[in-house]
Image 1: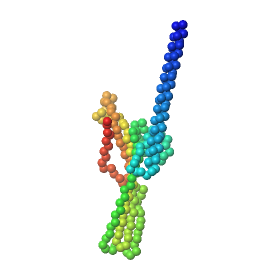
Image 2: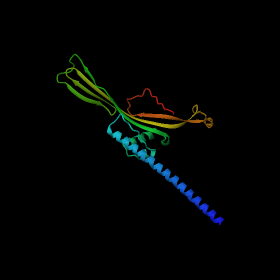
Image 3: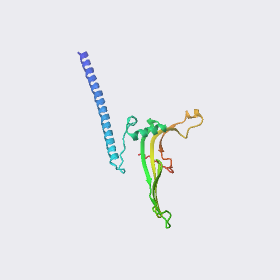
Image 4: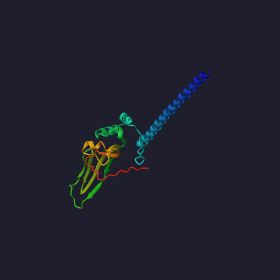
Length: 206
């Protein structure tokens, strides 16, 4: 009789254990799909804001590296391509950014003396993909210039390990040196006419 009770207790304990594992597994699976749902919901909102033309109201896309590699979006493909060209390790990337901007300004020069022959009205455009100059020459002495610069910028924020105090030239010394994680920002500006003169990035630690 005691043996039967023992087996019954063991059976009940096994059932409780199985149910507990099953419940934990279901909760984890439910949490995973819930997080995936909210991530996709945020991405839908981000796409909606992107397509609405609200340039001052930007939403962040949430994607895994696999999502990015499998994306058919042209900008996502550009980000992956440049990341590979810069040899940035995928598993170290924290965030990516893509920015396009243009700068333009209209200048009108009116000279007192007549410098063009009568009926002069020249309207021309010179330049390339990154820079263009719209030039207008009008009788008797008006010169209108409209230069435009196009910027295409890729920003990658990622973590990397570095030796404390820097890497030694003697490789065996590095065996005993500690490493710490640093966050680096790499910016790739495609416009050859644009030069960055000063940058500062601050991570707010709480």
